[in-house]
Length: 145
Image (cartoon, rainbow, N blue to C red; front, side, top):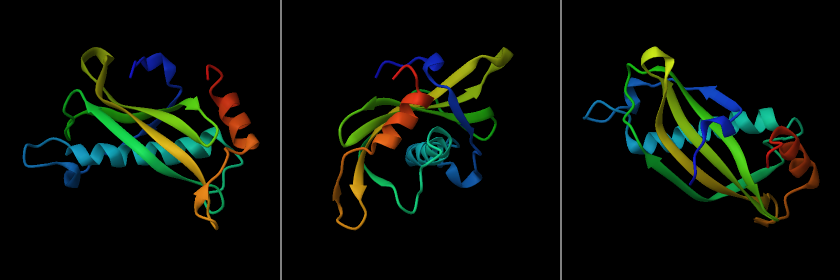
């Protein structure tokens, strides 16, 4: 995954909780996937004003995380960046970046990752084409797509 902070326009603040930590005192690796999920939910509400979580749904077909630097309770301004990076016929890819502020407001990259979402028909439990309205709203929100 080629990563560039300037590709992300959406960020959501994160709260590093005591329960996120492992015995080494840093956020456990599985929690980063939860951070991605938190960001993904808020991103979809922001990027698609038509999105309805009770009607429109996708499943995660694949998710990955590259851990770059530990994160602990003392980090400043933890946040997750989210963006749609690819759109296919029935699936789309989302990229993530877990960041914080370092010394002199430099950006510290703690983890980057991707997930592949497959649109599904909730009643039939099968994959479906990405609706045109969603494709258009994402393309409007992510003009570089």
